[in-house]
Length: 191
Image (tube, rainbow, N blue to C red; front, side):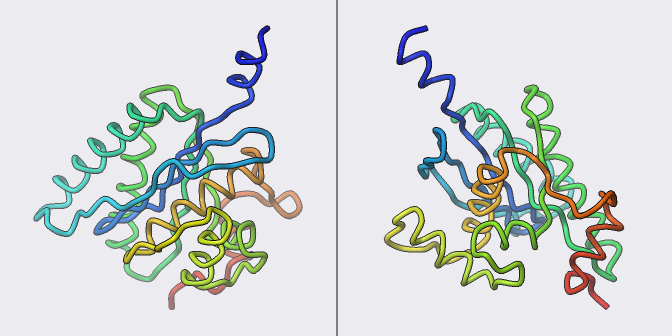
């Protein structure tokens, strides 16, 4: 194997997604070993679409376009938080599911991370604010100007978290899944 082939084999492209029904963030990074580089990040604006079905269609189309442009090796998503409003949770879950389906249709592996895990991975503080996450990413990626909508930096944080964990979900003890997530993230449960 030539050095170029070895390098290509070590390089990975990761797409991070911060699901949303009005704004969906995405971030694409290139990694090689422990190094990482920002390729692109931004948001998909969905408020302008009148129906939830049309929003889901646009999510699928835009994520498909990003997948075709960057051909990522893996997709990392932020797991939705829990809330009292069941309809909002259902819509958010559908949005996440559509993004996942776009990746799965191309055989791209998917990993989910809790919001707390993403924040912990990027800032060292699982309770960091969106602004603190964005500031850390600004430093790590030498970003000159942060976007107005921090959903973009949240998605970038998900991609970086995936890189730091190399696709391995870190769980405490034997409890994995939603019950464990609630126990580890009581502040994410809306009352």
